[in-house]
Length: 481
Image (cartoon, rainbow, N blue to C red; front, side, top):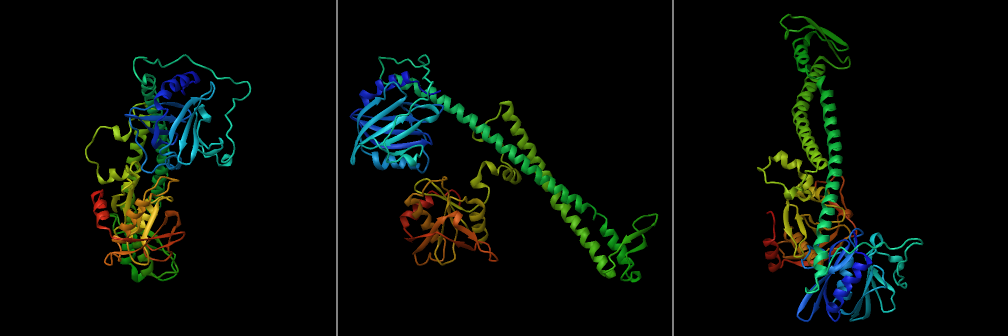
């Protein structure tokens, strides 16, 4: 539940005296709807948290650092570019509403950071000196450059105030923030866990259906092959009677010497084929049955075991006993088959092994070892928004950088990945060369060519040299070689 207007009044009264006159050292965006400003004041650094999450809109000081994504989101990058070093001139609540404005002086003039802590319509906005909208968290691009208007409640609706939930201790500094922070940490943890359970349950149901269809298809294939079970017997009987079979016959009656009673049985024939051709057909279909039984029975058993495991996990979610994989008790090492069945929990490990590195920005980099791995990396593991690299005009490894959807690759990460593309190519001996890079979605398989052969569009090019210092740093961050 979001902070009320009255609670916001109390928090602003607590924060304003300490933060006015301070300057913004850095901005962080640990979640899609939360921004943390690192504010330096004489002798102390504060973390001001602004949450525009509909269920927990709030403002307070944070005492604990939050985990940030490896690549800052676009709004965070804008804040860093334009509010870095800004001095806080004023911090106030707009009227009695759930809106807080922070007046700033930046290197390019006056700016205002506005936090609309209004539940479902919550937003964080940057205004210029004329109070025109420059950028906002909700990406209201059609409003950029236009005068900012305070949100207005719909007619007939009034803010409902609750009793105060947080009692400040007047003898302790920032005691209101200290009371608010753990309250919302617990709430967001519970909300995140509920969302995680819901997402996992959805995934399990979808996977169970998909795996069920797959098992049914295998059963159907096995049933089709089952009619060929005794065809080797027919082939042997035809082999013993080849001299009596004339082309054009539709069937032949022979003694079944596999049966102790030696009965006569009638074997259908293809009149367009010779005796040898009919015999070969029966042996071929018997081999088809044997192959189907050998391959499909283990697949069906494995598929059913995986479905049972998924159903047990789904049942634990429905019964309220489920725990995320990271919190489950350690168990004995899984078999290779079990490891494959858990691949959906570790999407980056489901194929490979590939060479694996971590960029200087903390992003995973995958490098194919051969043509087959190149093909599997690019068209199996890589997602459409991932970055793809390859040494220009020469045989070499495919390189993929895992990126969050909608994010841009940091320059140092591009150079790290390009260095690896050069290292694992025929340009290694020269120690320098051009590397092309593009999004994975612009890389297509070349029809009729060997695995790993691709066509690339919308690529860019980077000239790199094998920098020993960079290579040494990458090798210290390799996760599998």
